[in-house]
Image 1 (tube, one colour):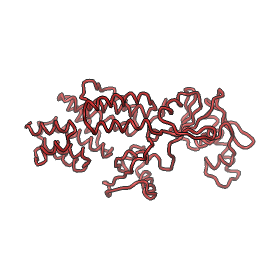
Image 2 (tube, rainbow, N blue to C red; image 1 turned 180 degrees about the vertical axis):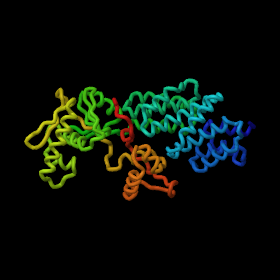
Image 3 (cartoon, rainbow, N blue to C red; image 1 turned 30 degrees about the vertical axis):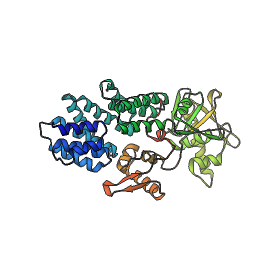
Image 4 (cartoon, rainbow, N blue to C red; image 1 turned 90 degrees about the vertical axis):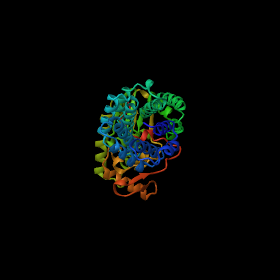
Amino acid sequence: MDSLITAAARALAAGDVLGALNRVALREDAPALALRGIAMAQLGELDRARILVRKAARAFGPREAVARARCIVAEAEIAFVSRDLGWPVKSLDAARATLETRGDLVNAAHARYLEVRRLLLIGRLDDAERVLALLDPSALPPALRAAHELVAAGIAMRRLQAKVARAALGRAADVARQAGIPALIAEVDSASLVLNAPAARLIARGEERVLLLDDVEALQASKSLVVDACRYALRHAGTMVSLATRPVLFALARALGEAWPGDVPRAKLLARAFGARFVDESHRARLRVEIGRLRAALRPLADVSATQQGFALTPHGGSDIMVLARPMEEEHAAVLAFLADGESWSSSALALALGSSQRTVQRALDALAAAGKVQSFGRARARRWMTPPVPGFTTTLLLPAPLPGA
């Protein structure tokens, strides 16, 4: 490798993108193409970066397996940043295996971190933790140690473990300063802001207040019966009842929880659960059936009793009831939660992350675009959607993840 390529690689590693480009901008050999592609990716020119990296991979000879594997890892990172979640994961795994076999452990670890970040983004927290446990950050350079701590913090935040996340971000800040890369320091600072932003709303006894992630963690550990409208579950004293697949029952449970210690009239329950404007005997019969199902589902946690006006929820042990709601609630809040990261998303990537059909996501995007909340650019398969992040709100509780304690 000649001196210019070496100098450009060192400049990229130190975060000096323009310095790297000045050294290789006019060259068309494979190493220069790869470095230019990485530099263009860091400048945000993702389409151009993808073309350069692919061109570099083709330019490397059959004996340069390590160089080609590094290009595949670079392309995978470009795909992740551009939210192309359908990029072939098997290619990344094969490239990582090649790098490990040939002794390039640093770039192999980088490939692992890309895999973990993708798993984290689509809500597969158990898999992300399993892969992260395979990595020992102590032998890695500061930039990758910072990436390790950022991923650990992301998992902890989605597990509602604010103290663990705060400790991980503190370690990330330390090693990011050691790395001396401004973009990495800014990424850690941005992640730290999430812990000081409203994460949810608490509704109790007719009043509302905003909670930080630390407050949410404390609430989950309290003796209160928590009606969790972020995860569609009820928790009390270490016992959880999930109603994520039973929206009618959860709507009834939330209405009863918000009214506690009072009751909820039958007409209001019908409106909340079924959207009924005009009530007839069939609606009343259905309400009785659904209340019976709710009573059976919540038997480990609380009693659902009939009153003269309607129904009331009474937790076991005389504890109080708290309703945990999202910081903002609207029909397509989950889609907005992903778009709030400021990145551009395709509808297929959103569908994969949300576990929904692409057509359902497209309808949601069209509705949000009509309301002026999102915007798109490009056409057909190149079409991307984005929106500026909502200031002052964290989307942690809106992201898909296994229910805590599940």
